[in-house]
Image (cartoon, rainbow, N blue to C red; front, side, top):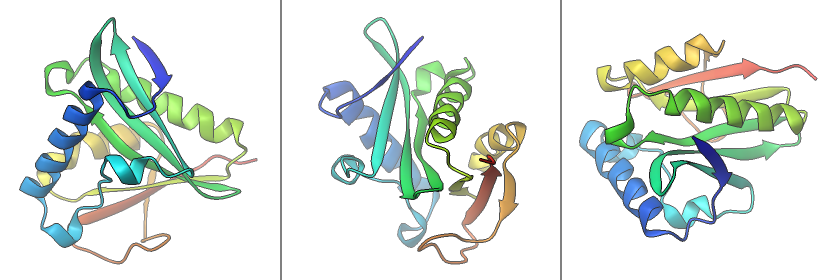
Length: 153
C-alpha cells in the first residue's frame, strides 16, 4: 500500500468521493452530513491523501488545519472492495503522523452515531480518541459523535 498526497483530479478519487457522499446521505439526514465534496476538499487548509495498490484506489483521508495547534480528521473512506484490509488504519496513522509533525496538540473528528459508523468509532477508539462535545462550528446533533486525540507538544 502506498499513501500519497492527492491533487483530487483523478477519476478514481472522484468516484470514491461520490460513493462516500451518496452513502452518507443514505444513512444520515441532510443536516447531519458533514462530508466534504470534491471542491470543498481543495481548500488550502486541507491536506488530502489517497491509498493505492498499484493502479487500484484503496481509500482516502484528509487533515484540516483548524488553527496552529488543532486539526480535524476529514473524509476517511475505504473503497468497498478493500474494507477490513487495514486501509483505514494505515490512513489514520498517516494523518496522526502529519498532525504530530505539525506540532498539533489536538486532533478532532466528527463521525456518525448510527450503527453503520460503529466500525469507524471502534477504529478511532483503538488509537486513543476519546468522546467529547462539538468543536469548531459543529453543534449538538443526535446523528453525530465527536472525538478528540490529545497529541501533546
